[in-house]
Image (cartoon, rainbow, N blue to C red; front, side, top):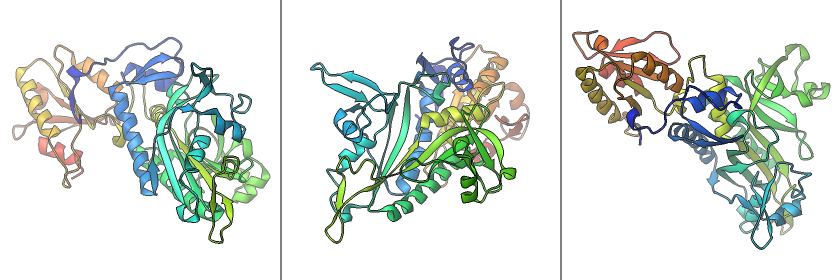
Length: 432
C-alpha cells in the first residue's frame, strides 16, 4: 500500500517508552510507533518502521545487484559441522552464539554470521575456474547473544543484516570486486542521506590482509573513536593508529580530528581462511587444484535505520531523509469543517494517483483524516513521525488565495512553510 489513512493505522504514538530504554533512536522509534520493544535488544518492526527498513534494504539490494550480486536466503539454523571444521564452533572463539538442540539431542547454532554456511554451499557449485568469480548476498535476520543491549536498534540481539560473500580465483581478481563493493557502499550511504557524514575507515586486517575497512558515520553516540582526515576523506580506527599506518596513508597527526563514529558497514578480505578447511577449491586452466579466494561485506539495514534517527532528529522528533521516509507526504486536515475534509479527501486521492513522467513512481501519502484532534496534537505527531513534507489543509489555507486551492507546504527540516497550489505541490513532489 503506497498511501494510507492515519485513522486506519493500528499503531498510535506514545508519550513514554520503557524505563530501561536509554538510546535516542529507540526512544523516538517507540514513541512514534515504528518499533515495539519485546525485550532488551529485541524489537518488532511495525508498519511505519517496516516501510523504512524495506526502503533501506531495497537501496542496498539495488546496489548489490548492480555489481553482479545474486540474492539468496540461507538458513538461520546452523549445522555445527562446517563451524567445527573452521574452528569457530567454540564459544571461546565466537562468544555471541545462541545455540539450541533438536529433540534427538543434536546441537544447532542460530546464525550470527554465515561464512561457514555459504562456503559449504558453494562447494556444491564451484569446481572450475570457469565458475569464478561470483558474489552472493542475503538480507536476513542474525542472532547474537550480546552482553550489552542498551543502544536500541544500533546493537540488538536480533537484527537484519545484509551479508555478501565474493568468490574469486586469486587476490587480483578479488581486489577488482573489492573496489566495486567499496564504491557501492559509498553510493548506498549517499542515497540514504549520510554520505556526507560517512568515511572509509582503516582498521586492523588480522591474518588475511594488512587492513580491513569500516565505514563510520560521525555521531556523538558512536561506540568507536576514529581519527579523521577531512581533506583526504578517510579515517583511522583508534585501535590501529600508529606511525606505520600514518606513513602508509600519507597522513600526518596534525591533520587528524578525533570523532565518535557509528560503524555502518565493513568489508573484509578472507583469502582462503574458510575455503581451505571446508574444501572449497577450483581447478585452474592448468588443471591444478587451488582454494577459492574469498571476501565478505556486511551492512545492517536496521542499524542504518537507527543511525539515521540518531543523526537526523531534533527535540520534536525524527527528520527522515527523502529516500527512506515511510511516506513522502503527511497530509493534515485541521479543524472540523466539512469543507476542509472534503477538499482534503480530493487532495489525498489526487496525490495518491499521481505518476511521474516515466510512470514508475507514485506519491506516497499518509493522510491524517482523524477528526476531533486539535491542530497542536496533529502538528506534534507529525513532527515526531518526521515525514519530509507536511501539507496542511485548513480554513485559513483555503482562504489564502482566491485563484486556487491553497495548501500549506512545510518541510520537516524547515521553520516556515508556504502556500502552494495542488499542481505546484505535485510538481515539487515529483521533482518536475
